[in-house]
Image 1 (spheres, helix red, strand yellow):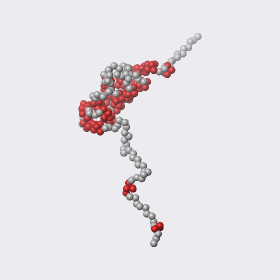
Image 2 (cartoon, helix red, strand yellow):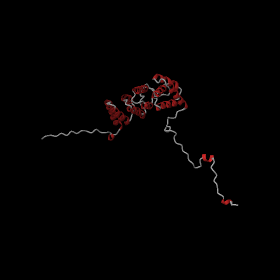
Image 3 (cartoon, one colour):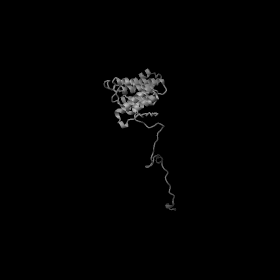
Image 4 (tube, one colour):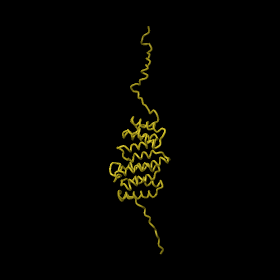
Length: 257
């Protein structure tokens, strides 16, 4: 009888559970399921906002004229909270439904929490369709509405000095967006109302953005006025040794003896 020591040792076949379950040191990673980028701040919508956006797109599927879009936006978005309404506007812009986002802005204007924020208007200008005369006219109308709201004291105070203390970064962003879209007159309207007449104290960067933009868009007289404003700002804020000095032209004359 053969000894059990010389019998071949057989390795039991792994069970189905052992095949499916990873070992204790196995690391499983999961990549993105499609080509979409990661969620960014402001991109996550609540369930109410998602349903409202879908309802607005459904209501305007047959007619997206401004009156129809405004009526549909009032019906679909009118009950949203501030954060949801702002998120819905941003999502509509991201999806390319600029006219629907504009209708949502009209809904926001009727809310008690609404304030004319230059950064909000800058996003609308930046996301507006290019080479579209209707969109260009709508951008100009947006600027006029923004200035009118500020001058009416829509920020919660009297109309006197409403531009004083305005966020310079946000205002510069609005002007830059208008210049990038080629809306020179609209950019000048904002600058003139806020800085030249409204008393908003801006920095050197705003002046240089305006001067360069007005020159590039063919408004040489306005560019010269901005450069004069910049020179006055430098005289008030920069020490003598830091101010740019004009190169004096020395005329060399000779006398014949």
